[in-house]
Amino acid sequence: MKKIVFLLSAVLLVGGSASAQKNNVSKAKAKILSETPDTKAAKEAILLAIEDPTTKDLASTWFTAGDVFYTIYNEQQKIQWTLKKGDQALMANSLKSAIDSYTKADSLDQLPNEKGKIKPKFRKKIVEKVKGFQRGFIDAGSYFYEKKEFYKSLDMFQTYLQYPNLKYMEGEGLEKDTLIPLITYYCALSATQAEDPAISVKYFEQIKDTIESKWVYGRLCSEYLILKDTVNLIRMYKLGAQKFPTEPFYTSNLINYYVNEDLMDEALVWINQALSQDQKSSILWNVKGRILENTKKLDECKVCYQKALDLDPNYADALGNMGRLYYNHAVEELDRINAIRDDKKYRVEKVKLKELFNQAKPFFEKAYSINPNDRDFVIALRGIYYNTGNEEKFKIMDQRIKDLK
Image (cartoon, rainbow, N blue to C red; front, side, top):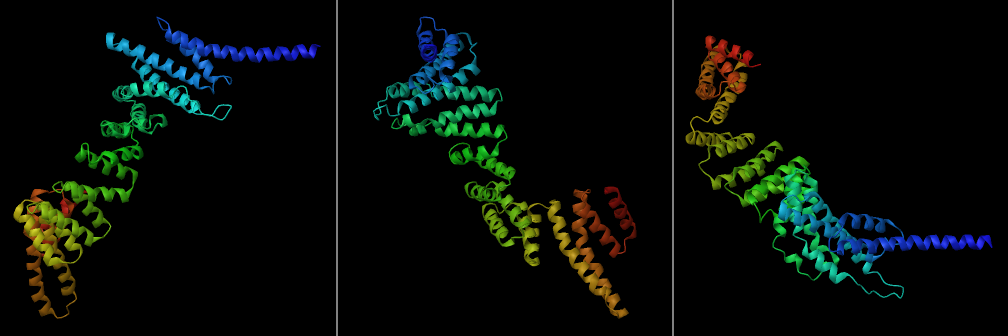
């Protein structure tokens, strides 16, 4: 008899717990529907219900939870509108909890009943409610962005973008939302500010040809550089060069990449494309000269350096490049002449050698006058003065090298 009483007591305890949690759902609903909603008490009650095994898998529990969180959002929004003192963080977090709760409610609402039939009770209401507060996620994202809480702003903006993918929003035409590109841009900005390039490139890629294209292309290049994603970095340089042909950034970086990789044919293709857009760029002519010099096309590269100097006579880099052509030729001749055994022939050739070094001298002297801290210019001038017998200037350059160390 005692055993039967004990079992009966256990059944009553379980039943009482289930009833208590169902009462929490009713209590939460009553608190937000009263003339003066008590959102604090409603939240406390519904949090108990969504954790309890007897009610956590009921669509009605989660639907009520959505209503509770949405009521909290509305309460704070009204305070913000009237007094400018609404708790905006609470608003944002409540809105996120509301959509999560409604989404959970819908998934449970679509499950078959004990007879294997699906008879949803809440979908229509869920669609109406969730659709009604979508714009709130823009405000929430903007709030966190201004607070420099960039992952939170990203989460809010992403939630806005997820609307067309919500199962219960199918057929609502949300994919046609004209704000999607702008919010995608905000997602990218938030990820960039959060220093998360792996996420930012995902969003920047989607809107690179629609919003702030000139800046976004440059940003994508920076992000791929940080990620060390050479394939996509080169892809963006090429796309940028095609989309913004008058912007030297993309072509210059492409050329630098190909030159550093010793892919001179590819570098030449892009420098020619750049020059087709700007024939009056001394910088581009100078770069083309370097490329041709690397491929041993010295006569052609000399023409390019001269064009650069015609456009800018004080272009130190082009002056140094032109001088180097003459200087390197003189050094090659020096090695040849030093191997001559015939003294008479040696003296004749030595005079010619002096003239070769003198051909390089005016270029390096002018380059040095423009940029006296360039070590290459100083070294070249020291060699020139030594080989032309100008001992005084040789000593000056020799000391200058020591000073630059």
